[in-house]
Image 1 (cartoon, rainbow, N blue to C red):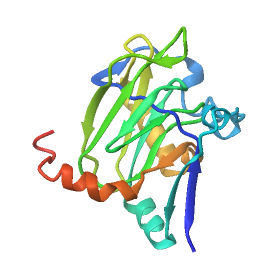
Image 2 (cartoon, helix red, strand yellow):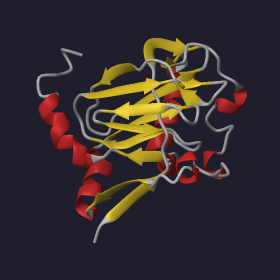
Image 3 (cartoon, rainbow, N blue to C red):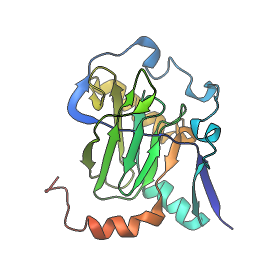
Image 4 (tube, one colour):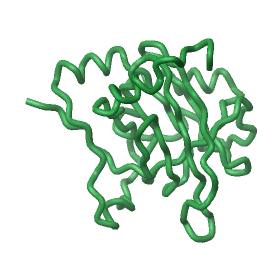
Amino acid sequence: MYVYVCMYVYVTIKDFNSCSSSITETERIGETDMASASPSPSPGKEQGMPPYSVKLNPTDALELVKQGASLLILDMPPGTLLGFDLQTLSVGPLFKGIKMIPPGPHFIYYSATNKHENTSQSFFTGFFIHPGPADIIVRRWDPQLEMLVKLCDEDEEERYKMSVKKLEFDQFLGAYDVHHYKAWKRISSHIDAEVI
């Protein structure tokens, strides 16, 4: 018996250590019911691409849910290319990040979507994270900077983290593809928190 974690995903990520300065009332947790977001057709489905899925046995899946970190990505535009270690995806309209991330170093990279042509034509920007077990990292897409930024409001960030812990974003988070993890671990074996 296997557990399949499926989701149509289209991704891009950018990040600085600065924080987002533009927050509207509708973006604040508690004022928007994420679970009631009406699904729209995924660009991948329209283009004949299969859904993103990860095949795990139930024991491994449960362990990753308990010990894995999460990267919550807010407001990333659909069509953005997002890379996570050795995997590149295109973000769909319901995408909110990655869950079940094994502890250790990971490289996130992204390319902004051309606003006028809805194509990805910019350079890739990236950053490393080094989450511990069950850590939650929150980033928001800043449309002016075209990158992922930290939230300025610590209380807001804590509310988002609590929402992830309560699994309120679970259906919008893609699972980390553990099948690429062994190769990534070999490549990143000399990268630690001190290096990052």
